[in-house]
Image 1 (cartoon, rainbow, N blue to C red):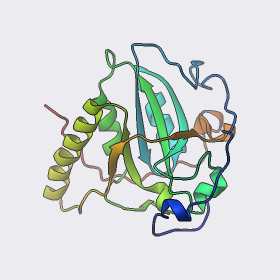
Image 2 (cartoon, one colour):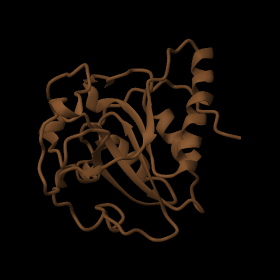
Image 3 (cartoon, rainbow, N blue to C red):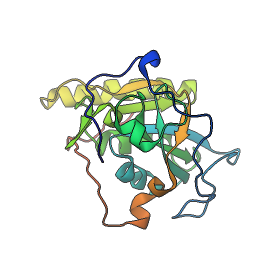
Image 4 (cartoon, rainbow, N blue to C red):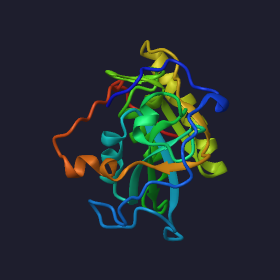
Length: 212
């Protein structure tokens, strides 16, 4: 992972112009063979999480029972159809994220939130471990009002536990999903294709208490 280590998000007017056409991605998931792009089955929902480098983050979710498909992408920025190289400059405003398509009957959103909170450090701001830049920020982008409510409540619940253990404030960005852009072909299920590839994620080591 490379690029300028930007410390601030650009304004929409200062963001790179991007392009009109999206990148092409594989039709199916490298691991489970399900479609990468929608429309998805009616009994599924979509969740989007930013946890630093999307390679390791995606693998954490595709291993979960009840997850239909996953993809690596970009969200939270202003540049249309950004390239990976552009995102790494810090001048698109995007975070590296993972889209998780899941069946709520088989895995709850709160279970996805548990993986999110426990497998990265949400107090690090514009970084994760050795990866520094706005594209590595912690983020939850929601697709329903219910998700937005649960995400905010989960942040409060986890913050209470972290504070007890001496950690600082959670910096996670929580807001409704705007545009989601798929990352390039070679990023999709990267650690399925390269099992020993780069997977850098810090974590607090503190269990998420869950929502009662």
